[in-house]
Image (cartoon, rainbow, N blue to C red):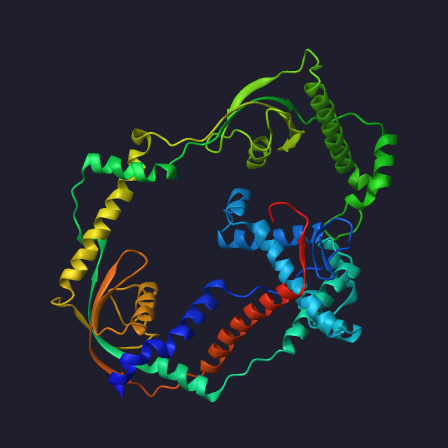
Length: 488
C-alpha cells in the first residue's frame, strides 16, 4: 500500500495542491466594498452597472491604505504605480459590477429591514452597548459620508453577499478522504541542505564583462529632463472682513471641528483666511503660467534651469510624472502644487535612457555574476552527491511538518515538503526558490491515522476559489465591459 502511494501520490494530489497554492497566493477579491456612480463622470460600464470616477478613487485609496499598512508606512505613489494599484482598483470594481449584474438578472434585492439589521450589528455605531442613531450620524459625518451614500454602499455589499450565498459549495466524503490521506502520508528522510555559501568561485574579468553585455539592458540610466521653472510661493494675503465673511458663508461646510460640526465664523476665521490665501496663490500661479506660455513674464519673475530625473528629483514624484508627459511641441506644465507652493515647468530637452557603461555598473553586476556561477556549481554538486551523500535523519514528516526539519526555516521546509509530496523519486534533490538545494533519501514511509478536522474547510476554500474564478470568467463573457480611462 505504501509503495503504491509513493508511486501514485503525484497524480493523486497534484491538482489539489496547485489549487491550494493558487488560493493562498492570490486570494479572492473582497466583494461589494464600493458603491457605483451615475452616468456623469463614469470610469467604466459593466453590463448595466456604471463605475464612476469617484468609486475608482475610493477603491484606489482603500488599496493604497492596505498596502501602506503592509509596508509599515513606507508605501508611496511610485510603489503604487509599480504595483499597478489603479488597475487593481479597476479590476476589483469590474468584478463587483459583474456580480451585481448577476444579482439583478435574478431579481435579488436587499430590503430595508436587512439594512437595519446589519446596521444594528456594526459596533462602530454603538453607544452604551447598543446602536445609537446620533453616533451613526456623527461617525459618518467625520468620514465625510452621508447616510444616503453609506446605506447605498451597504446595500450593494449585502446584495453581492446574498448572491454568492445562493451558490453554495459542498464537499463530498471522498474529497475529505483524499485530502486526509494526503495530510497523513509520512516520510522518514535522510536529508542534507546545500547552500551557495558552500561554493567558492574564481572571477574572470573578461567573463564578467561578457555577462554584463548580456544583461546591460537591465542597467539603464534615467531619462533626464532639462527644464526651466518658475516658483510661485505661497503667501498670506490681506482680505477685508467682508471678503472673509462672504467666503465663509458660501463655503461654510469646508470648516468643521473634530466632532464633525460646522465651526462658527469666529472659530473658523483663520482657516477661512488660509483657504482664501491658497486660492489666491493658485490664481497667481495660473496667471504666471499663461504669461510664461506667451513669453510675457514680468521682469521681476525669476526663471531657473535644472535637470530632473528619477534619481535626481528636487521636486516630487507627481511633478516628475507630469514633466515626463510634456513634449517639445507642448512643453509647458500647468501649475503643480508642491508643499503649498506652485511650480510651472517648461521642457527644454529630453535625454533618453541608455545602458550604463560596464565601469558604472560593475559593482552591481558582480554579485549577480557570482551568484550565477555559484548556482551552476551548486547544481553540479547536487547531481554528483545525490547517490552517495550522508545527511541528517528526520522523524516521520508530513506535508505540515514544517518545524521538524531543523536545518530549514519553516518557510523553506514548507516549500520542500510541498515539492517532495509531488515527487515520484525515492532519492533525489529539490531546489528551493532561495537558491538552496535539499538532497533527500526516503528511508521509510507510512500512512498515519491522524484526523484533520479542518479538511472540509480546506476543500471548501479550494473549491470556492476555483468556482469564483470560473464564475467571473463566465460573467465576463456574458456582460460587456467598457473602460473609459486610458491605460486601465
